[in-house]
Image (cartoon, rainbow over all chains, first blue to last red; front, side, top):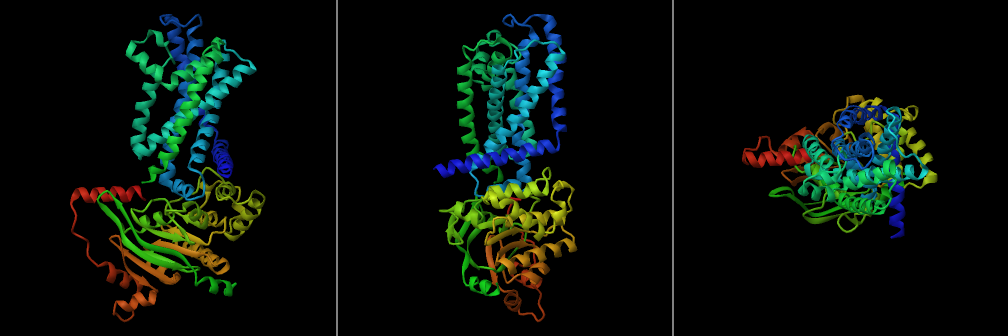
Length: 258
Length: 275
């Protein structure tokens, strides 16, 4: 058991390290991925902040949606890891990895960590852009640590989810369609760009079981409000959801090859 | 070394017993049995959709058999898949290296996944780079290499942990004649130096005729012939028969006319998914 656990940790790190090396060989992806959150904050956020129609708990609308935009950005990065699994299946790389004596969970955790690192790069871009737009955010060692933790957990959850989707749909074309169908409703059925309190009751019910809401809430505490009263619950939900989905994903993703 | 190889050749490294695989109502592999000895070069021939890739995928533990069993290096593919994985190297039909990583990084990845001890990794990689003649490309991104170099790298990856058995699924498909010759020179050197058993599938009859000790011909999920090249040629009853003649003799020369549209479509989808 101890041997399995050590092997799991070691091989998770190997998988994550190789994913990060790929990013370092071609960092252009990070720049192209920065465009979307900049557009959301710079255009959507700026425009809606003029209307003042959305209750934002005493903060500016740009402050309010910054955690939501960061969450959306991380979700989009993570959800397409499923596409990479299909790509690696088509390449034969996945089959080769599955034939090695590597725990199935190590590949999932490796991808999750890699998505987390990509998510952190989005956080850095958003920090810089909010400074340019003069959006006041909390920047303390505690808040930065909190953002790192929540980003890693959120990215991990959505990576696991995307790998499960990949194992079901099996083709890139179907995955692209399903990816769009899942990410946008998750985003709009959360507290990312408006508070849950203004939603109709049926949508509130959806938002309350949507892990993305807990991620946004945790990031909002760390970046904007500083009110940590419900932070432990947010993190607890994210940890449980991430572990549950990682085990399910480890069971499901090898089925992508059949 | 030749004595070592001679001794090892008595050992059965692959023993397949009544192995079958169904995909829904499609019976891809039907109750096949055969043996492969240590240090043999074993060619697995058959038309498209014959069940070769499915059989290889069962033997390397990627697919669970519907019934039957097989042992690899005396470990059951059903009961001890982890032990089987340690004993084999696998080169899939498709390009299976990561183009976004360097040659060295691709080798490092497989060395770690195959549990090569950390202190030995660099030395093993150095040896493999020399063996596959890619030393000066160690720091090049794989996407900049030629097809032949990529195949050599894949063979090198599969050999890092010194497995006694190497599975290759159509290893020379898409390669030019010079690259093919280089690949086979490397594989034969592996067999001659380390006594590695090489199990490969191919559509290339000349390649099989030139290299292998034993051939199995598969058709419609069954093994229809097995033996040395000369034995199979002899069974055709033709003087100066080639392996291609034997292949046609055992698999038939006509396109099959049975099956309905939906069955064929489904079968092709499965074949496509299975590569």
